[in-house]
Image 1: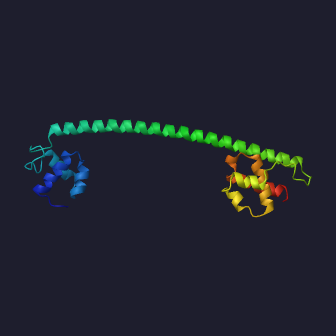
Image 2: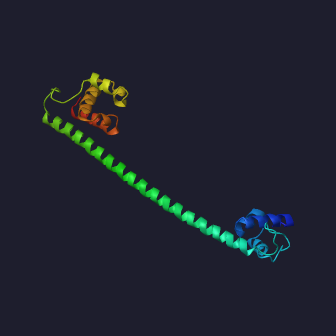
Image 3: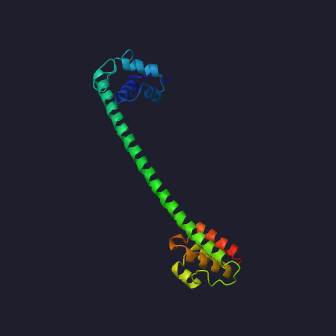
Length: 192
């Protein structure tokens, strides 16, 4: 424990005056919380002046001011919490909207993939690829030259599967993982 001096007690009284709790002040100055309480009550170090120039225990007028400030701060915290909860509600609504859009995109993708599968089943057993709707490789490269699938296509089988898949899907879905899976599925099912 630290041995207190009049100067340290003035600093303790200043911290208490500013609204610090007894426990925080005790920790800051390396003394016990009961010791700080005795200073605040005026049972010890009553001859050391408070920041307002008074002596003795913690002035009642300042205690009332601090209680009023704490109530105001509590009201502000409650308002802040209310705003925070409203923000969370908005975030949840936005997430629901995003989920709905993603579900709609998933349905579009599945519909397009199902169409491709149905057309593949219709022409099963036929060797011609002409009846399968497709884009030419030049059209695919021209429409989306930076697409990862297009850039990584190194063999004719992959290029043909990409042309078939891209003809079935909206351009906005060309650069998705699901489209890459669809291309692989088309290659497998067509035995390309």
